[in-house]
Image 1 (cartoon, rainbow, N blue to C red):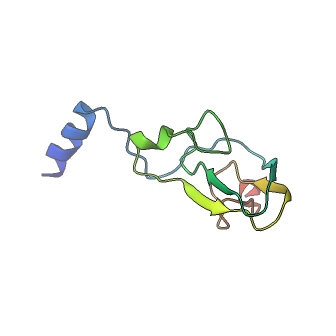
Image 2 (cartoon, rainbow, N blue to C red; image 1 turned 90 degrees about the vertical axis):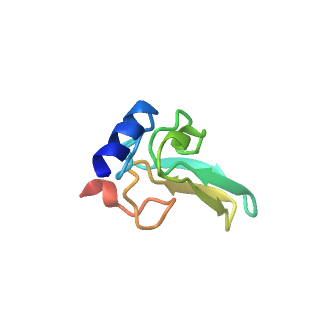
Amino acid sequence: MKEFFNKLIKSLKIKTMDKAKRAGDMPVAVELEEGKTYVWCACGLSKGQPFCDGSHQSTDITPNVFEAERTGTHYMCMCKATKNKPFCDGSHAG
């Protein structure tokens, strides 16, 4: 049965990802506005990093929707390994 589904997925050209693509080796500084909703790319495929452009639709990874808690500069994760999504927690370093 598993083989059947793997063939089906390949025939439909669906990208399955169990791990996000690393979009960068360092966080990126972005200006966020308090109360505004943002969508952070969790799959690493977006051409508009660190924000989602819909590229995840061909994967099983979903973006992270969040509301900025304060206006100012925030450091957003680009390695996609953070435990503090969408913000950098230093995971890229090790």
